[in-house]
Amino acid sequence: MPRPRPQYLHKDTSRHGKTVWYVRKGKRGKKHRIRAEYGAAEFDEQYKAAIDAIAEKAKAAPKPDAPGGSLQWGWLIYKAESADWKRLSRATRRQRENIMTHVATTGGAAKIPTIDQAAIQAGVDRRMHTPFQAKNFLQTMRGLFKWLVANRTKYPGIGLKVDPTAGVSVKKPKTLGFLEWTYAEILKYEERWPIGTRQRVMLDVYCYTGLRRGDAAVVGRQHVSIQVSTIRDITGAEVTVSRETISLATEKSQGRTIVHLPMLDVLKVTLAAGPTGDLSFICTERRRPYKKESLGNAFKDACVEAGILDKSAHGLRKAAATRAADNGATTHELMAIFGWIDIKEAEIYTRAADRKRLAARAMSKLGT
Picture 1: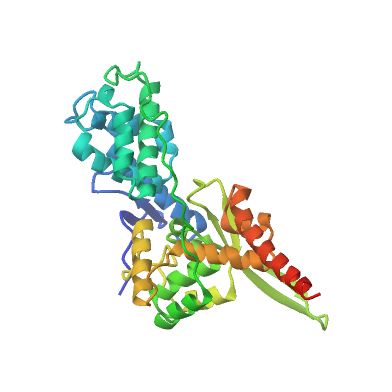
Picture 2 (picture 1 turned 30 degrees about the vertical axis):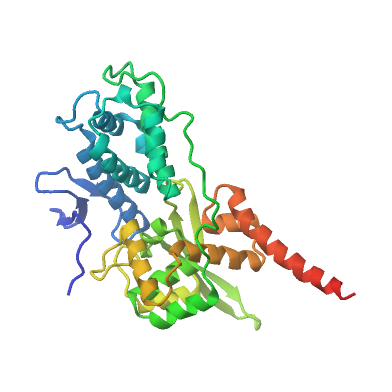
C-alpha cells in the first residue's frame, strides 16, 4: 500500500510536465509552494515552515467574543502582535498555549489591571507540587505581562503600569534530574524490541545521535549527506570510501545551532531494517512523523513494556554524554555533538569523567 502523505501536502504537475509540491489547508486555503526537491534536506524545513504559517494565521486574529481588557483578550493580542512570541520555538509556543488554555478556563474573563503579584504568586503556589509546571506557568505569565506593560499606551484596555510577575520566583527542586540509563537497561530494552521494530528505531536514534526528543522526532534521510573520498590502503592501492553525516538545525536553539553527526554503522543497520518514514526515521504505524509530545508518550510505552519504568529519552542523552566524556571527549567536542551553547552543560560530564580518572589514579597510591 502507498504510504500516507503528510498533512496538507499536495502534488501537481505543471503544464510543462514539472512536479510541483505545495502545502494548503482546505480547497480555498493559501498555497505555500515548496521549491526544494522532494527528499532533499530543505524539503522538510520548508514543509514545517508552511505548516507553522498556516497555524499562525489561524491563531493571529483575536476572537471577537473575548471581552475587551480581559486576560483572554490580552493573550490574543499578545500572540498576534508580539515579536517575542513569534521568536519562540514551535514547541515552546505549543506548551504556553496549553498553559493558557487552562488559565483562561478559570481566569480568562478577569480584567488585566486586577491581576497583581499576589494573583501570580497564587498561580505558582497551586502548581508547586510539580515545580517544573510552576516554572513554565511563570515564564508564560512573564512573557505576556512584560509585553502588555510595554504596550499599554497602544492598547488602552490594558490599563497596567506594573508587571505583576516582577519579584515572583520558583524555587527549583533539588533533584538529580532525568535518570541516566544503565548498559543493562539498554540491553533489556533491545531484548524486548529487536532490530526491525519501530520501537528499536526510537532507541537507536536516541542512543547513537544524542538528539533531544524534538529533534529526534524530525530527523530523517533528508538530513543525511554523503561525502565520497579516495584513500590509499596499506598496499598503496586506491580505495573509495563514503561517509554519511547527519546535519540538523536544533529545535531548542531555534535553528541557530547546527549539529553534524557522523552516521554510526550500528545506526545504519537499524535504519536499513526499519521501519522508517518518508520524512523522519522514527515514525508511527502509518509511517508518519511523530509530534514531539506524542513521541515521548510512545517511547515511554515501549520502555514500560520492556520493564523499564523510571527512565526517559533524555536519560539516554545523558548516558551518551557520559559515555563520550568517559572516552575522552573534551567540553567543546561534547558541545559540538549535543548542540549545547553554554559550556557549563558540557562541563558537567567532563568534570564527572575527570573525577573517575583521578580516583582510579589515586587509588593506586593508597597501597604505596
